Image (cartoon, rainbow, N blue to C red):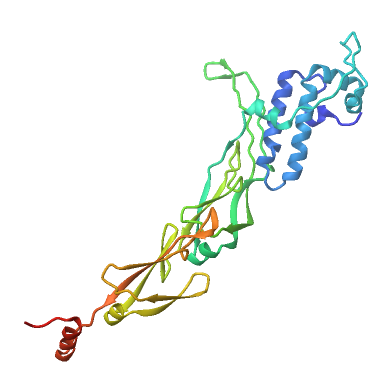
Amino acid sequence: MGVDYYNILKVSRNAREEDLKKSYKRLAMKWHPDKNAVNTKEAEAKFKQISEAYDVLSDSQKRQIYDLYGEEGLKSGLYAPPTDVYNREFKFSPRDAEDIFEEFFGGLRKAAVMETKLPCSLEELYKGSRRKMKISRIVLDGSGYVMLEIWQVFAFLLLHSCFYVSVVSSYCSKPATVEEVLSIHIKPGWKKGTKITFPEKGNHEAGAAPGDLIFVVDEKPHQVFKRDGNDLIIHLKISLLDALTGKNFKISTLDGRDLTVSVSDIVKPGYEMLIQNEGMPISKEPSKHGDLRIKFDIKFPSRLTADQKSDLRRVLGRTTG
């Protein structure tokens, strides 16, 4: 006989179409894999069995062959339906489980998105890194369900009036909290606001597919550099003497290199020095970088002696007149 489709669908052998539909709806909602994050493999197997049972019993030709020859006879292709006077060969072709489910429910809506910040240092966003993130989410484990069958009763209340009481079928899964560790690959050049989506790793809700979990990159402030798109900005303090005569600076880059910068031009207020390709990596073209922009804060002396002022006038070519 093989598989007992009637038993799988929890219906009698003389079940009508509405009985099959009602039972399929109840069982499919209970065992759909999207609603069973804890016991997914078991749910997938049961959901497939339930769908196949409904497919066979709701199709008159398949059901006739199954009732006479069982599952093995149905799938062998050796038997034709009794109503086929030409006794033509019948080939068993099962329908897709998700297609059947969508016919009934139109596809599950998704639960609300879970969104959380992912704070990243500027060094991580420059070099890239890998993170292990421990998450906690609510899932429906498929146990402890309550099913209220549709029923009707006559009763007399108050003035002995007659009425119907109907309870609509409903299914409740017991919520459970599970923890999981996710691996996140932070790519060089990612910016604040970049989103990393883990499909269906969010919370579960009754009657819905699991929601997505989204990490949103948040950039931590840096003590030395400030980011402006793909460029990096650094402020260097320079004395008035060095602003006029020049100086060499060493800058420690975000990937640990020592970058020597030679300032030979006269540094005026508002002067900005540009070093190409020393900015942030461009995420879509990691081999390319933005620029490093150096801004100078000129330190003026708080006071000068008379001799110093005289020397400056002489050097700069100014006279008291």
